[in-house]
Structure formats: structure tokens, C-alpha cells
Image (cartoon, rainbow, N blue to C red; front, side, top):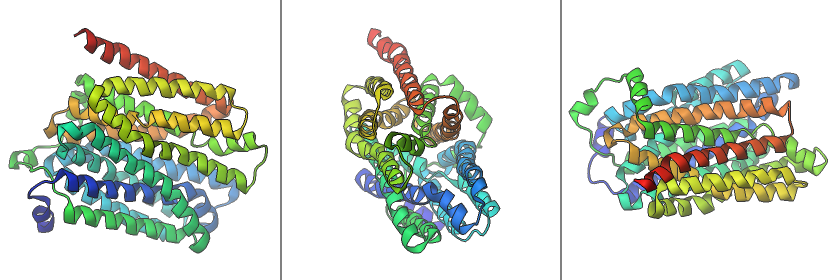
Length: 409
């Protein structure tokens, strides 16, 4: 405990915090995507689940983590306001490294399910890191910095599946879990050694945690409620396609073989690549023009682009639209994060990030379930058009309630 106190205090360098936490978030996201996309293979080959039950167990072990995270995020956020974001990042980092190691030694699907539940309950490294960065960035660098942090998420999400795929083919799935565990451990050690936190007073540390009161206060904070809603909708629109892409690519290519899996993997990566390219740009534009204005613009453009899915006839058109769609949608998260900083007091930022993380994780539960459900009743291209309509409606709401209203004032 003394190590946390000694290393967590002292002169704060926002540049060092930003660099170290960027690396930490990159490793955390890479660790996650290194193993999660291959859980069906792990269940089938290592845990010997029957092929007829793989889809059931895959959906279960995937969704319980999001559900656990959505439940616990408000608590961990409130806890961060008492003891500091840095400690919460360290707690989550070492805890997740431990659960990934446990997943690597699991011997049955029931054990893996228990580990994935535990993973969701103790998660929170990325939101704690994002909150800590937002607390130490100068106001003039807020949009750019949050956009840069989003590139860490995108970069890790791209490289993770590639690393996991190679490790799995070379050494088996279990090694991927162990490597992911080591990556998270390394990221957390970097936080312990190099990151400094904003000082917290004794009064703040003694403040009692009342999640029900926090939720009630958030419902009265219209700015925070708006941010939570935007995070939820963006995550739903992002995740709704998860269970559908491979089969849709197979339909467009007219076959089902290894080339389909590779093509689907590349298309999954396009959004991440677009995020690396566009997120800092949109964050900087938000800093210059106003976060809500830029958010409104990117939501409109992303929604309009997705309406073009109705005209897709081959894999190249689909890939092109997904990439352009990703270029605009990449601007949503950094500007929503920056907007969150505007509408919350610094002393409440941990709670705020916890609540929006809960909304985002809940969107991660609803998105795939909704996509799978709708996939049984309509074509995938029609579902993609629906996501476009949702984004257009979100952009319209933002314009009439935030942008236009502010302009009149």
C-alpha cells in the first residue's frame, strides 16, 4: 500500500501520464481482442464442448463479462473518487491479468464461465485510465488528448486478433491467454512506476459510496444523462453487427471457407484502422469548434453513410462503406468523452466515468443480442440501415437540443 501512496503522489506530468496510459490502454485492448474473438475455438478444441453447443457457450461467456462490467462500473467509478483513478487502474489491471491466467488454465466451460463473470466484476482499467488522463490534461489539449487515447483503443483492437490468431495457430489457445495476462501485468506495472494521480483529500477518501444516490443525481444531470445515452447508442450500433459479419461476408463472396474468415477479420479491423486515422483529427476539431457540434456532424455523416448499405452488391463495396463509416464514427467517442468532462465536476469524475462505462457495457450486451435476434427476421444490410437511422436520429436530437439551443443563447 505504501508503494501506491509514494509513487502516486508528486509532480504531475500530463505528457508522461498520457504516454504511459496510452500504452496501458493499448495493451489492455490488445489483450482483450487477443483472446475473446477466439473463444469459440477455445471452447471447441481445448474445453471439448460439443459443436452443437459451441454457439450457446460462446454467447454466454461473451455476454456475462459485459453484464458484470455494466453492474460494477458505477461502484468502481465512485470508489475512484475516494481513492484515486490510479489505484483503480492498478486494481483492475492486476485483477484482469489474474483472470486471464485463470482462463488459460480452465478445464471446463463452467470454469471458463466463472472466470469470465469474475473478469466483468473486476474490470475497469480502460475507463479509469481515460478518467485519469482527462483529469490531468490541460483544457487546451482535452479534445486532442482524448482523441489520441481513442487511437490506443483502436490500435489494440486491431493488433490483438492478429496476435491471438498467430499464437493460437503456433502454440495453441492457452498460450494466448497467458500472453494476454503478461501484457496486462506489464501495463499495470508501468502505471505503478510512472503515473501520478491528482491528490485526494482526507474528506474525499472518507466519503461514503451511495450508488442509488449517485444514480438519482445522474438522472438530474441532463448533461451526464445525454452522454450516457450517446455511449449506449454508439456501442449498440458498433456491436450489433458482431454476430452477423462473417455470414454476411460469406453471402457476398458466395462461399464459406478460410478466405471468408480472413475477409471478415479484415473488415472487423477496418473500423479500428479508421479510428487510428480519424479520432485525433475529430478530437482536435471538437476542441476548436465545440464538442457537441462535431459530435452532431459525425453522427449525421456516419448514419448517412450506413444508409448506403442498402446498395451493397459485393465485398469491396461493403468494405469501402465500413471504412468510411468508421472514419466518421471514430469522432464520436473522443467528443463524447470531452463533453463528459465539461458537464461533470472534477471531484465527481470517477462516478461519471463509471456510469457512462456502465451504459457503454450495457450497450455491449444489447448490441449483439439485438443483432442476432434481428438477423433471424431480416437481411443484414437492412439491419445496417437501421443502425444508420439510429445514428441520424441521435444526430438530429443533438442538433435540436444542444447545438441549435446553444446557438440561440
